[in-house]
Length: 282
Figure 1 (tube, one colour):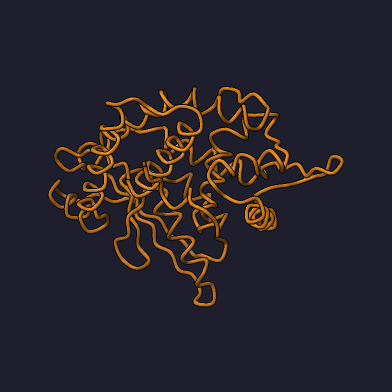
Figure 2 (cartoon, helix red, strand yellow):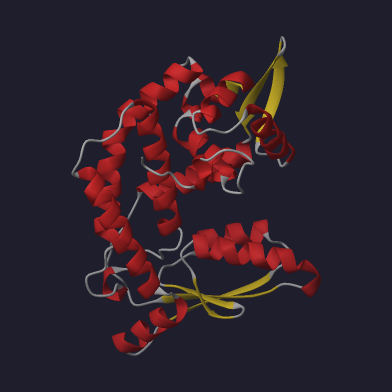
């Protein structure tokens, strides 16, 4: 019997159940019934992953309190809808997962320096996660590099972290070997290469066989999305000149897109049968 990751096991709900709920909304639920779903239908769908209704209610209530959702009542039923903030998060995440640009490089680096007061330690950690998600690499404790011009995104960060003092420089080295040394210092591409190769080995074998249908297609699609997201958010998507030899990022991306396409119809049909609503094309 095939083993699914911990996300799909019996309660108590693991920490990554949040990612499961986000993937269900990001892939299906926000495209059905104008982005609204009744709590009962949502609980039915989570039961497909062997998550008990009582535990799911607790988690969804917490996510609502954290402004993931807005809710209203219609009769005795509660209706959930993603907040505007979470819609934006899902839009950005989807763009990152489903878009890959292997472009040429102009040779310039963006250097970001920041200072955050010690009393705002949590903000410092959140900013570091945001920088990693945006493709920056950590050169020193408060110095991050990107091989792309990131003025717009840095302005957004300045608005999101007003407590941080930021400075930005554009710079370049004198030769490509120095750039390659910067890459090796800022990103652990050896480990990422290994993880990409494991992804390709696992999902290539799946692609060569008969794919599941119904509930199995949904579970496989969500698992595929979760594995891809974990790799994508660690991948700085470097320009071609800075990529290691035989870099597997593009191969893994194309494999993901092919499998996602093949699983989309049976997985979506299963979701529609559970929630009783049509999922439109995104």
